[in-house]
Length: 473
Image (cartoon, rainbow, N blue to C red; front, side):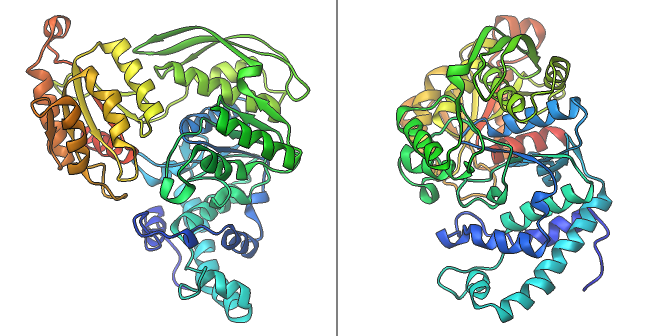
C-alpha cells in the first residue's frame, strides 16, 4: 500500500477524485449492493454501535444535529453523519458537533484506501457478480462513488473512536442511499416534497416510496406530518415491514411558540402510546428562529424518547440550548453591513417557512439574494418570494450542482418585473451589490441604527455556504 495519509485534507482530496457530479450521475450510480460489498470488506463498521437513521426532503439536517446534541448532553459518545457541509467537508463526519482528530480521519482514510485499492480489486478479479457492480463498463456497474466512500469513511471513524451511538442522515432518497446498510433503533422521516425528481421520481408517491426504503423490519418509524399521498405510502410500507408507525401529529402538542431574532421558545408534550412513554410538558428553547425548528426539535425528541427512553429533561433542554447549525436562519455579521440572514431553503415549502420567519422578524421590503440548482422548481419559488422583497438578486448556487441562473432570473423577472430583479452570476459580486443596495435603502429604524434594510440569502445550500465563506473571509 502507498504511504499513509498525514493530514485529513489529504484524505478528502483523495476522496474528491471519486466525485461524479450530479449532472453526470446515472441511475446505476445508486446501488445499495455496492455499499454492502464495501461494508463487508471493511468488516461491517456500520454495526459498531446502535443508530438512528433520518431521511426526508426538508429538516433532516436539523433533526440530525438536534439528536446528536441531546445525546451528547446525556453523556453519549455520538458519531454524527450529515450533509451538505457549509464551510468544511469535515462537518459531515463529526464526533458530536466537533470534528474527529486529524489522526482518526487519517487512520480511517488509510483503511478505506486499502479497501478500495487492494481488497476490492482482489474480490473483483475472482467474483463475477462483484465485478458487474464495480466495473464501469458493465450495464449496472461503476467504480465506487464519492458518496459510498464518504459514508464508509464515516463508519470507519465511528468504529475507530468506539462511539456508542450513531446519528445518520441520508444523502438523497433512502432505499438506495449509501447509508441504508444500517439497521437502526428507530427511523425518522421528515416532510416529503418534490425534490431530485430526475432520480427519485416525479410524484410525491414515488419520492415517498424511495424515502420509505429506510424503514426496517420491526423497527419503529417516527414520521413528520405528511400529505395524504405520502402518508398512505408510509402506512403501507410500515405494515409490510411490521414496523410501528408513530405519526407525529397524533402524539405531539406544540404550544406557546415565541420567535425572536435570538431563537425560538416553545412548549411540548408527547402523548403516550405503546411505543413512547408520556412526556410531561417541556419548556424548551433553541437558538434558531422559526416555528419549523420547534417542529424539528420536537420530532427529534420523539425519536430520542423511543430509542433511549431513559434520557431525561435536563439532557433534552440542555442539548437543544447549545445547538449550532450553520446556514439555518443564521445571522451573519460584517463591518458596516445590514442584517444579513442565510438559510438553506431549496423547496417551495421550506422557502415559504423561511420567508415567513424573515418577514416576521425583519418586516417586508428587504433584499433577496437567491440561487437554486437546475432541478429545483424555480417558478414555484419565485411566486412565493417575489411579493415580499423590494429587490431580488439572482446568482449562481456554487459549482457543485448543475444550475442555470439566467433561466432562474427570467422566471423571477417575469413575476417581479425587470426593475426589481437583477442577475449577477458571480456570487461575491452579488453579495456586494445586495449589501450596497440594502445600505442605500435605509428605513426608519434601520436608519437610526446606521443599518440598511435586511438581506436574506437563500435557496441552495451551496449558495448559502458560499455566502458564509465570503463573510468569513
